[in-house]
Image 1 (cartoon, rainbow, N blue to C red):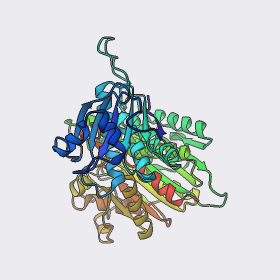
Image 2: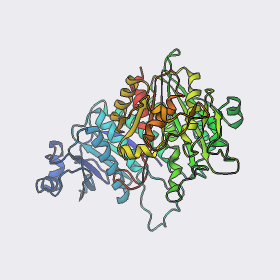
Image 3: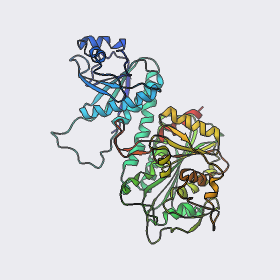
Image 4: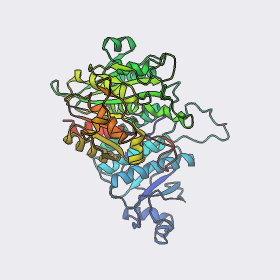
Length: 491
């Protein structure tokens, strides 16, 4: 169930809601519009702030009893000292919705003083993110332990732009929720076929054109790099193309590409057993593309966008590709496979080559590609690489607007030497040194002449612990970045 978010210009003191959430920055005084509510509570709000029982630190919460005629409960949520207010509101709203779920309320109201259109949209996104959870495979609790589900939220803000901002935030939130659900599903359920069915559902709902290639069609396309990864599994690989055409007929499309390894065992170069279950998240790039296409369609952006997903599983078997094997890619280049666990780039090589048929204005791919990027940037920022500096800066700015931080890493020509093969045009692994950059150099070989950016989301696509505002599991990155790129280019 997804959260229904709406808006109202009602006063906080008189709005009848099971839970009123008030967002306050660090050491902020009580906003004047809350004076009537504070008076009805006998000064509880102002005392809590003046006594520093609540300081407004980031992620701080304080739960208070409400009134009979207005809010039944009140939750103060701290925003800290935000350098970016929209980011702080998104995070605070997510915490608020998670707390509301724990309290067992079916609806809440959100109030943040002086929130502009961007702040209202960010809050709507955050509320949707905080309300999300994956319970599809859990037995329901007994009747006596069951609590109401959080079903709706109301943003209390005046102005003509509020409803539009809420609708936009809900659209982005729905796209992120779709992405997170796909990522959280176990690999035996979220298969390449399931991703294809999800794409068909998106296409049917929003009037998009869809093309799905299987093993036979990819053989006809001579996608030997992609098929090398797929040859170890009986599951049918899928190359999915979703076409959203709301721009002018002659406008070149923005192409979004996602790695969709529904499970990555490492193949013959098998991964360690400990933690391997998290390799179901190796399709977060694909989930990001599908979530972004959902959000872009809900926003109704006037732009042409193509979403490409390359999906398979990487398994060891008697038919699996072996270290030392050489395959020919869709572009015609021969690849020596040094490490079968460097499989995502083999899939993306053919998908990036396939993207040329759409004559793209720009191509942005996302992949949980390298552990080396996690070593370099941790779990805070996405690694950003590319062959066009203007597009790189556009993508970094889009990430910043969406609250998905990125950091540019180099693609020096010298890294190409690490990828030199003795028997083929290129090899798929250059060793541990500069591992994120050599993976980017590999992809650059197949990106052609179009402007291209690669997002290495290995450290940001999912979290292995509860972060307070986001539970353990998928984060939804890079949906926000993809959507902001499209919004920035829409006419």
